[in-house]
Length: 127
Image (cartoon, rainbow, N blue to C red; front, side, top):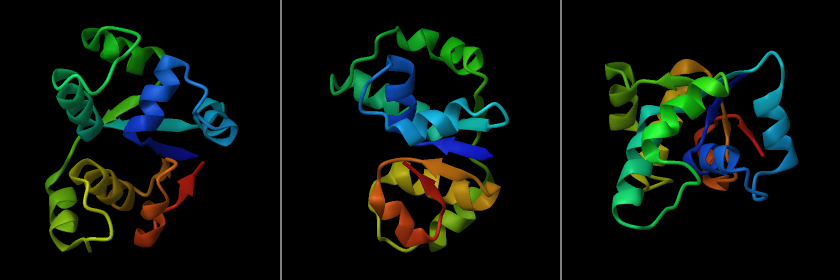
């Protein structure tokens, strides 16, 4: 099981929020799971923190420790991702979600997200 956590999923997981579904938590905590956090999510978190639109239960500087401590890996954005992004239909307008969608397609990852629009791109989602 190879998963890409959507930004809200990652935040809710590290914050211990109840909004995270049971299925999502099980997929993340599954013993054989390889879980990834996109660098796009970290960028989105940084922007929302600087705008005062987000609060974390930890300092942003501690997020890498959260990633490593939970056995997650950071997924970089590649040129191949940007090529797919340039041709991606606009079912979804959020630039961070669009990057997560192409990373899912490029790397064959299931996205753990409550965002129903992801299905418009034929990606596998868990929620």
